[in-house]
Structure formats: structure tokens, C-alpha cells
Image 1 (cartoon, rainbow, N blue to C red):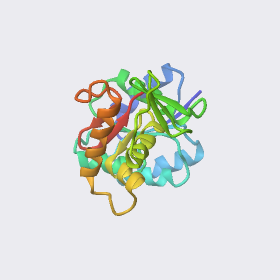
Image 2 (image 1 turned 90 degrees about the vertical axis):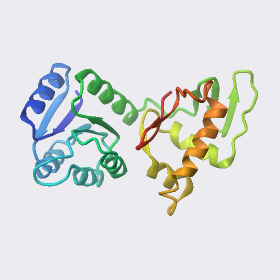
Image 3 (image 1 turned 60 degrees about the horizontal axis):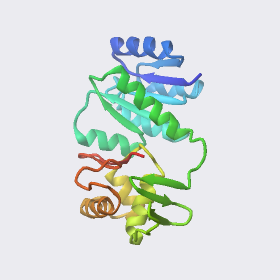
Length: 225
């Protein structure tokens, strides 16, 4: 039974989540403040956290940072804040996904299943398919179904590797820029747009309508297998 910590101070939402999650076999623990969230998490280490950012005692982003000090459990933010700055800040602090209120329970459950799959992979996958191309992470090679190699620059390869190693995960622009280009490039979003465009032209069947290398406007990018 998967243990879920729900952190929210809205009674109606908490009750709805508790009923729906318990009905689907989840073990549910509740917290209405940031302080109680960190306390409950320490007493009953969660396998998944559903977190609202607008808590009565302190900001949910601080809860994310507190949890990330000792746990890698996936954190799904469920918040009424729609500003892109809030979303990016939560992702940079360590959240795995972000869903805006009001939300549909079916979408929430699907997001939960996705982040749980990513946090518990059956095994490392050295070979990943992107459209009609095969990415061999061990050999650092990309080939088409015909066997023809696709040539990538070192930067293109590094960006692709970071994305495919986190399938389905929303990666913020800051995370990708720091990972691929290093400290000091956190605001170089033009670099990111250029190289994402290059990868789409080489890997997506229709670069104008990508199916795998997706943009989340104002937040970052996501690789969907």
C-alpha cells in the first residue's frame, strides 16, 4: 500500500482527496500546515507528497526544501497559484510536477501514477525510443529504424540525455541550463530554445508538432516516451 501525505488547509479538498485515495488503496496521512507536514513526514515517511503552496504558517516551497533535505519521495504540487514564477520556484526547489486548482480527480490520479513510476523504475533502461529513433545511452548513439546514425553535437547529446533519463518529468529551464551548461547559465534560455529546436528537427517526425520533446510554456520541458 502506497503511503501518501496530503498537505492542504482546505477541508473540502482534503476530504475529497482522502475519500478518493483511500478508495483506491492508498494509505493517506494528512497535514494542514507546513510545520505539521514536516512532523508527519518524519513520523510516517511518505512515498508520495501532495502539497498545496498556500499554507497558513509558511510557504509550501519551504516544505519542499525541508523534505528534500532527507527524502527523494516524489512531490506533486496542487495549488491555486497560476503564476509561472510560482511554478518554476516549486520545481527548482525539488517538486516533481505541478497541477493547478481546480483539478479533475482523474488527472490527479494519472499524475500520481506517473511520478510514482518514475521514482520506482523497474530497471535502468539503457535504450530509449524517441519517435522513430533509438537512443542508446550506454553507447552514446542515436540511430534511425533504417540503421542510419543521427549525428548530435556534444551539447545536443547532453541535453537529450538529461531529458530521457527523466521520462515524463517536468524539468525547469533553470534545472536544464545548470545541468547541461553549468553554473552561471541559469538565465540563458535562448541557448535552451535553440538546442531543443535542433533536437526536434533531428528526432521528431513533425518538429512543429512534437510528440516527445515537449515545451511547458514558461516552466520548462518534458520528455514523453
